[in-house]
Length: 250
Image (cartoon, rainbow, N blue to C red; front, side):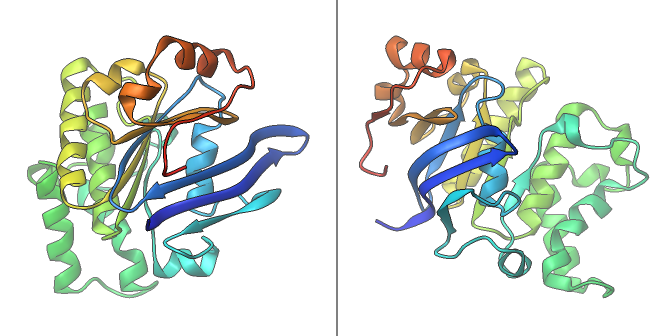
């Protein structure tokens, strides 16, 4: 099986604080994965490790067959949409300019965008239904609109991997549904999507191929119908060490 992302004996700590322990995990190319777990369970740290922002204390991670080093990131950017609360909404930049930042690796630093870059930015905004607000300052948008803009930025990178950290957190129910409908469309286009959430209701809005239950270590990884059962969910959200492996992709 071809893995887009693969962890082997991966452990991560911040100083003396253990964040992720002995992660062994293979995410197939083109899969749509949900990562669930309570706050502080290591979900965001796992995503940051995929884009190479965290270096493991032990073990390895491979993304598209390569370790995600800084040099690798410059050539093969992974689309990463951070939590909306981590974004400075007062930064004086337009919607169009935010999405154009996703083209940096293709354009190069201190160079001007070409016609191809502009067309890709416009198409990315069109796909998230935000082209009509291209000139609007990012800080003037609603939370749901801002989330769509940052998804468009990730799309403009033309990556085959999209990581989304709590994409619907703090949004109203209709906006959450629209975000997950967009994820459904992207998944249909062959993009490997990995989405974190601590809200189990999110799993009602979108079909995921597999669900990873995480609480510092892998509690379970497998199809939703096998993972989303009371015993495993209780174990995931209580944090007791009881790994259950339910997928041949693990």
